[in-house]
Length: 92
Image 1 (cartoon, rainbow, N blue to C red):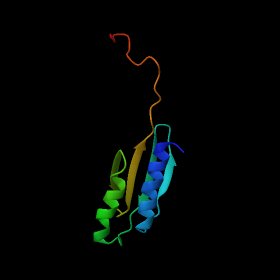
Image 2: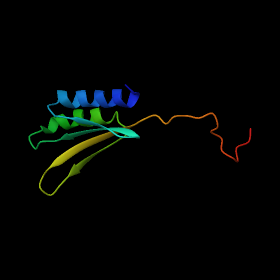
Image 3: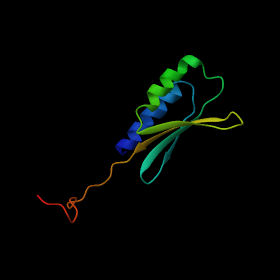
C-alpha cells in the first residue's frame, strides 16, 4: 500500500475510534478520507478529531444549510521522480 494509503488508513482508524464512520477514496494524485460528523459528537471530542486529521496534507469541514457536516482530509500521493528534473534552463 502506498504511504498515502497508510496515512489515510491511520486517520480513518483514529476517526473510527471516536465513533465516526470514515470512508477512504483513492484518486489519481491523493487519497481522501471523509466522514459525516453527527450533531451528537461531544464538544470534547473535537480536539481528538482535529489531531487525527492534522496528519493529512489538507483537511476541512464542509457544513451545509441543512446542518449536514462532512469532515475531509487529503493525503497527497508521492510524485514519481525522473532522471531529468532540472529543466532546460538548469545549470550545474
